[in-house]
Length: 167
Image (cartoon, rainbow, N blue to C red; front, side, top):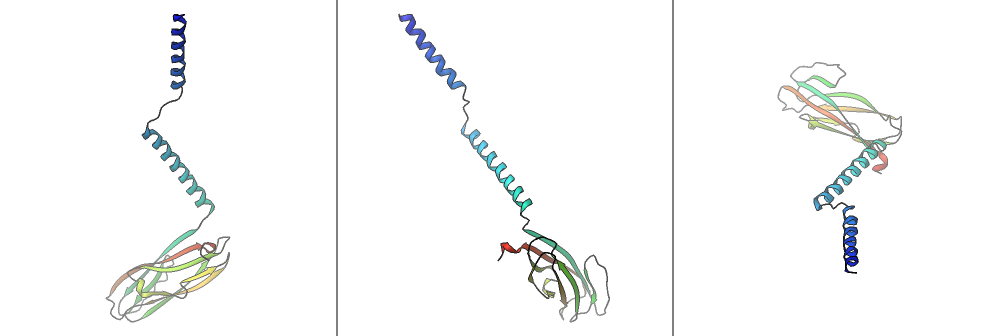
């Protein structure tokens, strides 16, 4: 009878040991690593899907340049807004068109960057464009009276936003 009891205890111990060995034990750092990996993968997928299906923003920059001297000169290049040569206290104008090529309303914001930003203005700083619509704008550069002779540069920055996000 004692033999049988002993065998039952050994079998119970063997069963509980085999049941425990089928479930791997993870350390706290392994669990945290798995959770972090899952979070990063889910976040990346969300951003990729959202950005490809919801284009919200487009920023375009175009160079602007001028030479300040006491004479006048023209530059008719089309790769930038070239103002040529303008004397201190004088001004120059350029015209351009903005077209909405998207299938939704766009809010357009125009700003300037660079050393000539304070010399620049635009006929409309912010406006709404419907799909396919165009808007003609005039850029004005006024050279300050005290401007030092030399070459100056900057950029026109056009920011295009989905209008339904900002109304």
